[in-house]
Length: 83
Image (cartoon, rainbow, N blue to C red; front, side):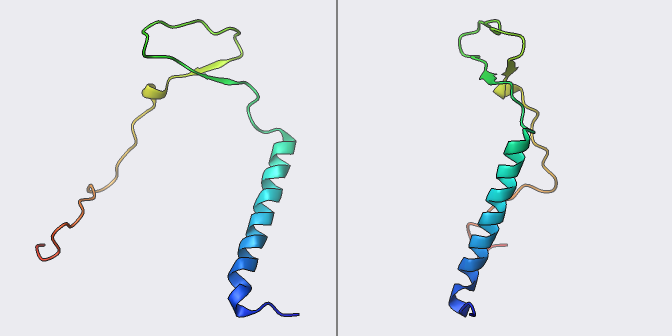
């Protein structure tokens, strides 16, 4: 039984999806993820509530390091006749 040429991409997509689901399921069964729940801090009110228990992490979204840009910034060419 051969796979027709029109269906090769769909079969490849199905195989890759099945392998990815199997790997993700295996990793989730092994328990590599962090089991501590994450709380987002409310920075709008200005007050900080203490964490209910010491095992809960607080993540400040605005305090993430800025992304590093390498190279010149992208400027779209809105007028293709001018260079």
